Image (tube, rainbow over all chains, first blue to last red; front, side, top):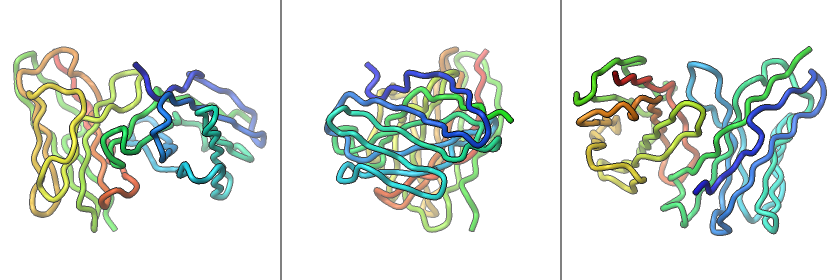
Length: 115
Length: 111
């Protein structure tokens, strides 16, 4: 049973436009969420996180939105750049997952930013 | 500041063999977590070590075991390898209950 779902396996966006990556979770006991980016042959790189006490967190071109009632979060990248092309993973943690250091990951969304 | 490193980068084993993967944590981090990433999936939590003790385990059989050393580096051992163990094995280090930073991974192929 997947507790964290990324229903879009891939997304293609034009350079300069907004990229929106979505993630849904099933358990309301998750209270901390993270986004990681992964290039081929590298490990996941931490991008941005959000606690369940917030509904938005921003860091430069990256903004994460959390809708607790819908159990949904999204990552917005504005403007998108070709270097953003990678696989993006959503992850959740909390007491329900066995502790804040046990991350539950989605399957990932492959973002392609084209000129 | 040195990041998380893992060795080896690639490994080929045959069914039934045993393997040891190694991870050096980032400076100042005392917690190491191990994940298995199968093709087309997200990473799955195997277990975590904090101050040399196992501190949480995912749904993996006992033939997956680990160690953490006084310098906070870690090993993942897998006994009696199965074909389905073929995957990318990721190590992540952190301070306790803070953001995890991943190494580049070890790609294991079991034939």
